[in-house]
Image (cartoon, rainbow, N blue to C red):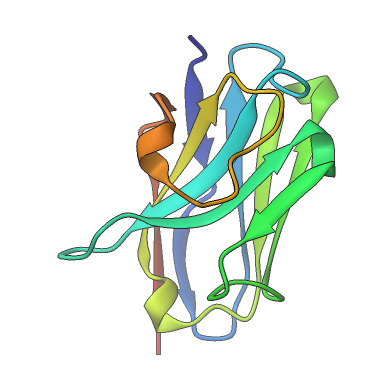
Length: 126
């Protein structure tokens, strides 16, 4: 199992930007599907994006497409989420997840992932 540690959350105003990082305990580039998920208070967990093999597969939720960009740095075993044009509705705890697949499923379903980080809070004020 891989250990994941997120960082980079914070408070920003609407329209601002943040970059989240997820450091993995081992190389996940080619053997894991990686994902970002988020959960706001009182709401169900929502899939944000999944990525495999540095971008061979990338799938964004419609709510973030065009505003968020996912990337991987294999040399650092780190997954990133660049978030721009942030909106108050992006406020949530953001979690990194990993599952040992050669590829990713065709839906953003957190129930398919078994390795999770502790989360990092993102708060966007209007």
